[in-house]
Length: 209
Image (cartoon, rainbow, N blue to C red; front, side):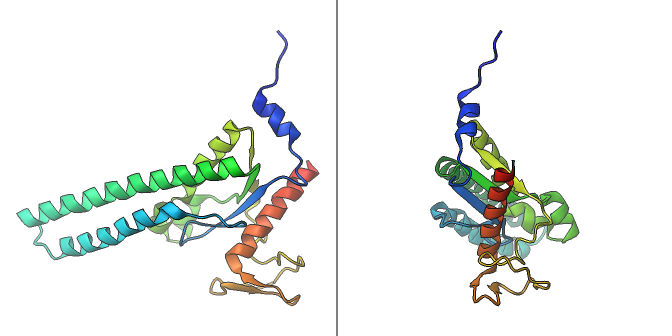
């Protein structure tokens, strides 16, 4: 039997990576991610409100006498809040990944180990609640299904330290430095600068074959 290429494979071959629509994504502890292009995360607000409600319900639980009827009723309310947030986050991530997979030919991310990050940086709960790992999984299969690509840029690539305008690399950049300032005059948000660098590194990798 002759092997016939699928539509997805043919589509992948037709990409002009020089002019392809590539989106760079930089992981962010707050807000999940920063994008190299203006991506409207319109649906994020509803589960943020649920998180505020969860905080209130947890405070009420802390004031209840453990083992009392009020304690168990309040504990159930907290559990329901957690379930609602999980459902809303999943819905948000599905919608966002679908929108991006439809709009871009290639998506570039850093090849970071989310589990290792949560353990080494002692941000376990924050990293797991962030949803970035799940978002990356959803994005990868949706891109693949459309014959598009998810490119992983090496985790040691200096995306944050490199100037997206002139290519100069800063030897030192503190986590507290939220604005990237370069001697060439470039002044840009640190995470946006990283996302642009990730995008362009992915383009270089694709053109290099």
